[in-house]
Length: 436
Ligand code: SF4
Ligand code: SF4
Image (cartoon, rainbow, N blue to C red; front, top):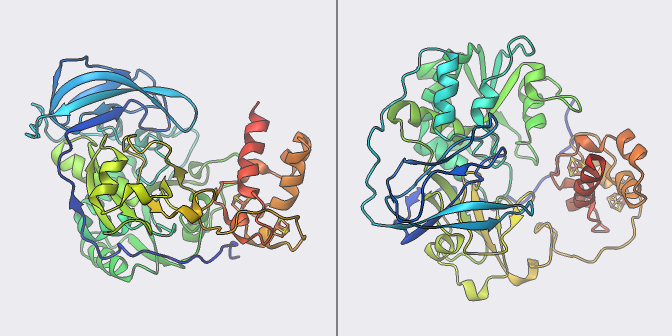
């Protein structure tokens, strides 16, 4: 059985751009909410000297990861940042000294078993770099009595238009990705590894297949169709293993752990060096960017700094988003900082300013014509048009019956709808309604 999907223009015009490090900015602002877990408590105060790799925030909660300084310099204050969730979190503001002095004591972690591996991964500040930001040590720390995990899926689909950071990771950091995989296999006792790459990245498929053949022939590199949303967790698990992650379940329920390819590359680097997660590869692209590129940027650099680096005239900018055009999030303040979960910044013209989903050019909604295209597009077999009606009536029973909680907000239904209904957005609201 083939899951429903849609075809999008790829717009991956940075695919051949070698990643370049951005110059150290004069200031950075490092958020204490970097992952999909509890926010960290600030561990430094105004006037403190800090160094690259120094821990500046941590939490006593299990579902959280520490935050480290990406620069050397002086803490100028603790500020507040309004997040998309509407919550406010603390930020450490640092004036850099340009020296990039590394904190003392950075060395590869000592790891001997699964527990020490999970502890090391937590200490590194690692969370899902594909955008979800779930703490990686929590995925690795699954309960053996509850889950029987035998398969690792490396998600290298990168199915959203414009995005090429994972593509470049595979070309530029191949060895570290395989070292990451070797460590995960060894300490988690996993037998099967699948690396899923969309077939619009033939050079990455070639490089990764060659490396797999040289290092571990049990690792299977699988070319996937270039369709959206190939990289959605439930979709890639099904397409690579044939296993179905049911409503309310997670991949571990069917014996699978899914890790983004850049996260895996970071783990490989960390195990060799001990340098925590303080920088990341980001695609800076979009029609308003003069020099679309991939950059290696310190966590905490401002969005506007990266946009200027890529030749964007901020005066003419219509809209900027973090992430891809289908699932990305609007940037309301260009001075806000880059976090671990940001894989792209897109600068777009004024025409798309008001569009919620920028792949939809016309924003005026008309009545549903019952064409059924939204149903044909949904990868998890939902009926978006019926969900919209149920949400408009605030009919919780029907929303549950129609399994709205399975919706992963991929936006495919909104994209294909000729009436330009805000179907995916309504589903997000409907899920929130069920939670209240
Ligand atoms: S946004 Fe939800 S309902 Fe719409 S296509 Fe994606 S999964 Fe299906
Ligand atoms: S795609 Fe749009 S117009 Fe067609 S059935 Fe779905 S909501 Fe109605």
